[in-house]
Image 1: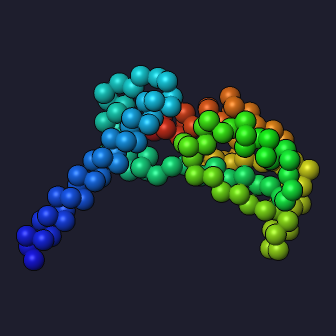
Image 2 (image 1 turned 135 degrees about the vertical axis):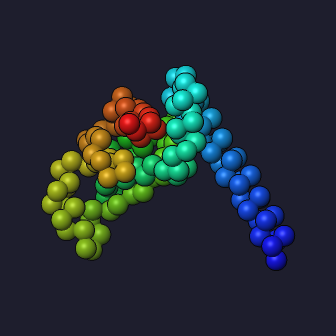
Length: 135
């Protein structure tokens, strides 16, 4: 049993190393910036960077402006987990009141980033803030 546990932990460490390495390479490749070794170490040690940030799109069906915004953000959507929230769904009356004249509305990890249309600059800035080391 001890041998099995030891092998399991060894494999788990190897898998975690590959996930972290992939995350760092993704950060370097997508931000087009060079990270110092200190910044890379901080990313490796910060487990919050293993998961992709959540891009929340407040929308309704149909929403041609939302479709257009997603098309505009397309090249960067691989850096996030996209979740759509239908503001017309039962139970979302508060969202309907808040966003009915503003959709599409985007939040990254709960923080508002843009509305009415896709703003690539605002989206890139929000991603950089997410991936940059926290002091």
